[in-house]
Image (cartoon, rainbow, N blue to C red; front, side, top):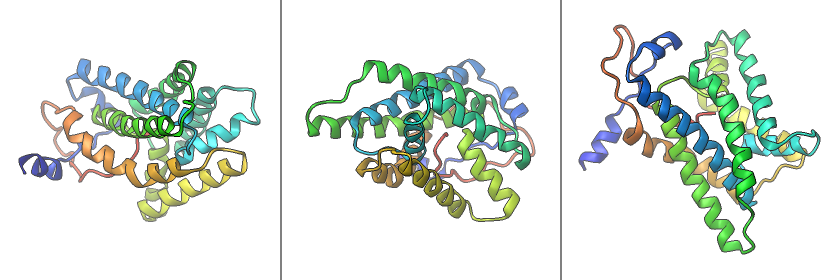
Amino acid sequence: MGAMRFRSSYRLPQLDPLAQLRAGRSARRLTQLAAGLFLYGWSMAMMLRADLGLPPWDVLHQGLTHYLPLSFGMVTIIVGAIVLLLWIPLRQWPGLGTVANVFVVGIAVDVGLTVISTPDSLPARIGLLAGGLVLNGLAGAAYIGSIFGPGPRDGLMTGLAARTGGSLRLIRTGIELTVLGIGFLLGGTVGIGTLLYAVGIGALVQFFLPAVAVRLPAAPSGQRAPKLRRSVPR
């Protein structure tokens, strides 16, 4: 019961990029940021090798690999960089974690794909998918909990919401459905894994985040600590 109260009352500090760098506990936060991003990419490789369906953005990334002479990780990096450029007209400011996300995740997923192979049996593929999904939730929580800024895709969502006055939920749904549709038309893998990711990733991140989030020495004055959102660090 105490753990449940702890999770429900947790608030993630919302800091601008400069405040993130000045917030303290830098060694712990940088280590957690790097580990979270690497494991996030590794979990993507697990879900790819399971071949049972991918998250919407990865459906797009995989679809693009059919038409570009690039690895999955390199496509991920390029798409992330393009999304980050879209922050400019939205007047969004990326943090250190935002920029690191673009490169580290793409490198990590290529490393994972060189090590992990697709299992022969369906039960093993299901296990690989389930493990990748849970690891993705933990890695996402670790990355968010380092408090170095949102991922490029989350920033696109919040920026569009701020500029248009639209609902975060509707804008996120619209973005996810758009990239999923384009990726599917390009030949990306859509399946049960896509559905499980859409339904479960928010709950997994929210479950792990209180346990891994770095507690800062003191919140900067004037900064609010909003209620935790169920978001993915991409």
